[in-house]
Length: 154
Image (cartoon, rainbow, N blue to C red; front, side):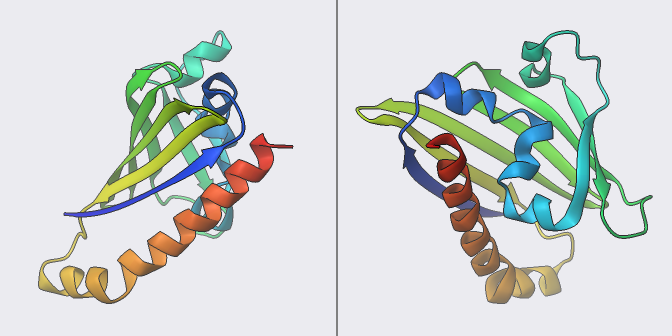
């Protein structure tokens, strides 16, 4: 199993950072989602804003390219307000666990973005992961964190 983890300090309190973690706002800052999806829409019932970050909340991503029948589903599996949120992302047969951690620091929040993944192929998947995927994801997450920081510090 592979893991990519990146952190950044943001000049905003954890409460403000937390609000940006709702699944339908991820497109505003996350590079991979921005390039692949038109939108993310909640599939679970949302009666109040806190429902978007509760355990069991689900959403579906609408791809920019066809086939639109490609499964792109998200489900929040852990949620500790202003501290930690985890969700499972299923894209076809590929599944990852995404973790966001928020830690208060003197000038705001230390935000950690981690993704645990397993390539869906045997030895070929391991080779692709080592040669390409891991490095690509590290660069993408660095850009995403810079976007996130920029939005929150406006």
